[in-house]
Each structure stands twice: as structure tokens, then as C-alpha cells.
Length: 234
Image 1 (cartoon, one colour):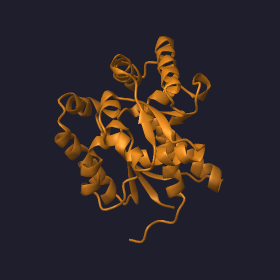
Image 2 (cartoon, helix red, strand yellow; image 1 turned 30 degrees about the vertical axis):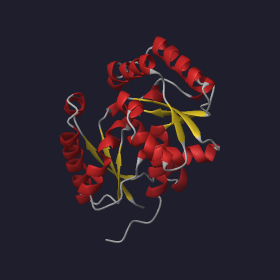
Image 3 (cartoon, one colour; image 1 turned 45 degrees about the vertical axis):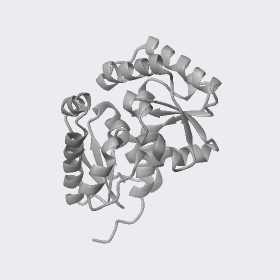
Image 4 (cartoon, helix red, strand yellow; image 1 turned 90 degrees about the vertical axis):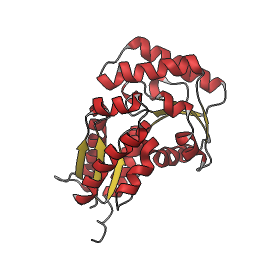
């Protein structure tokens, strides 16, 4: 079994989901008392959030790169960044480790292909929706993305950071997200990717008029498949 390295804590609410999903998959596949071999570097999200707001991406890259290096040194065979936004600094993390980085965009693309869709509505932090680093990763897999207009991007981003990353779930926020998803569907989105690992705590498939790809679940499930492969030779 391979050892999975998680860079988590952004926020811890979704990192718990990674741990659960990976272990449930391993237990289901192997039975008995089996569980996954996992190493976790859980960072202080307040420190990361300060770097985000200052747009100090070099500093964020060093912080997560150091976490990834510690995971690699601990014997992790593959590393995951348990957040969509911080894949903005994925190149810095990849440069700091000597094992593969399992990119969340690749896991999302794999699930989109399984659904047979090539146009996704994209919900996440403002940088994820507004900048190209995430959309370009999906485009590399032949997937087009649609994002909300600026006022709705503001709503999505506010709910993520003022509510979901602090463990706050509000019905009115769910209603707002569903409205935004409906508008993306009207513009041609065949499915919607919840490109913040906390959004799945608020909105699920039963709430949406189109299929939902929960990025945290897709990423963790991909990690579980890797975990079940033989460990890499040392």
C-alpha cells in the first residue's frame, strides 16, 4: 500500500473529509481492520489566509512547499494539497518534493470525463473563478469552464471564507448557490464543479439541477486509488 501525504488545514473541516473518504475506500476494498497509510501536515489556516489576502503567493508557496517536503521526507509516496485555491502555488510545492503531486484539477477532469461532460460551471474562491490557473488545468483535459458574473462571484467567495471555512452552514447561502448553479446551467454548463473543498458541506447533488462534481471527494477518491497500489520502491 502506498503512503498518502496530505497538506491540510485549509480548512480542517474539509481535511476531515479527505481522511474519511480515503480510509473508507481502503477499508471497503481490503476489508478487516485495514486503513490507509496517511501522513498529514495540517497548517494554520489563519496564516495561509493572511498570505492570500496579501497576495503573497511566493510566501504561500514556501509555506506549503515546506509542508510538502516534510511529507516527502516522512515517506509519503504521493502528496495532495487539500484545497483548490492553493493549487495556485502547486508549482512551488512540486519543486519542493521528490514524489508526485496529485493535482486536484486532474481528479476533477477524470470525474468529468466519467460523466461524459466537457463544460463545467465553476464555483470556488474568487481567485479560482477569476484567474486562469485552475481553468487552464481543466482546459488541458479538454474541459471548458463557465463562471458566475462578478456580483455572484462575490457571493460565492464570501460564503466560502465567512461561513464554510469556519464551519458555518446557512440555508440562505445554499439557496443563493443553487440560484447561481441554475444560471450556469442556463448558460450551457453540463455539470458544476464545487472548486472549493468546503462547498460540498453546503450543496450536494440533491440540491443541483445539473450533476455535481465535489472536488474534495474526487481528489480524495483518486488518492484512495493510489493508496491501494503497491508502495513505490525506495
